[in-house]
Amino acid sequence: MTAWSLTPTDALLVIDMQRDFLPGGALAISGADAILPGINTVAFRFQHVVLTQDWHPRGHISFASTHQGRVPSTQTPALAPEGRLILHTPYGVQELWPDHCIQDTAGAALHPGLSIPHAELILRKGLHPQIDSYSAFMENDHQTPTGLAGYLRERGITRLFFCGLAYDFCVGFSAVAAARLGFASIVIEDLTRAVDLPNTVRSINTAFAGAGVVRIGWAALAEG
Ligand code: VGL
Ligand code: ZN
Image (cartoon, rainbow, N blue to C red; front, side, top):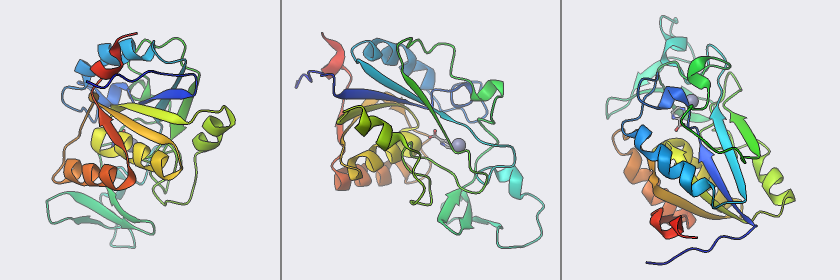
C-alpha cells in the first residue's frame, strides 16, 4: 500500500460533519456516525485542518418546503426522470432537500462527536438565499467564490485531503473544485459516506477521474 507522508503544506478538509447529516438529523446520511472516530484520528496527523458547515438561511432555495404551494412561476419544482425532486434555477438544476442546517439551529451545529481542537478555520457555505453551495470553494452558480482558495493559497497550502459528508455532494464537489483551482486533491474515501441518490455516486466518480482527484483509504495515512 502506498503510504502518504504529510507535510506542512497539506491540509485536511472536514466537510459538513453536522448533526443534521448524521443519524437522527434532518438529512441523515446512513452510516455517517461510523466515520467520526477515523476523522478524529486522522485529523491529528495534519498540521492544518479546515472544517466546513452547511449554513442555510430559512427559506433557502435548496429546501423543498420553500417551493411548496407556490403558484407556477419561474421556480416550480419538477420531477426528474429518476424520481428526484429538482428545481430549474438560473444557475442550472438544483436538487431539493428537507430543511437542514438552518443557521444557528441545533441541527447546523458541528456533531459533538467531532474532536479536532486544532482546526484553524470553520468555513460556512450555502448562505445565499437563492444559490446553494455544495462546494466549499464555489457556489453552485460556478461564479461566486467562497474565499477558501485564497485563504489556503495565502497560507502556502498546496495539497488537500477531503473527508466528511456527503461523498456525492459536498465532499465531491469540493474535491473537484479544488483540483480545478490547482490544488492536489485527494478524497479519503472510507472517511466519507454518500447520500447515494440514483446516479450520484457514479457521476461524482466520473468527475473525479476527469479532474484528477485521487481516491485513497485512510489506512494509507494512519501511521506516523
Ligand atoms: C449536502 C445536501 C444538501 C452535503 C449539503 O453536505 O453534502 N448535501 N446540502
Ligand atoms: Zn445544504
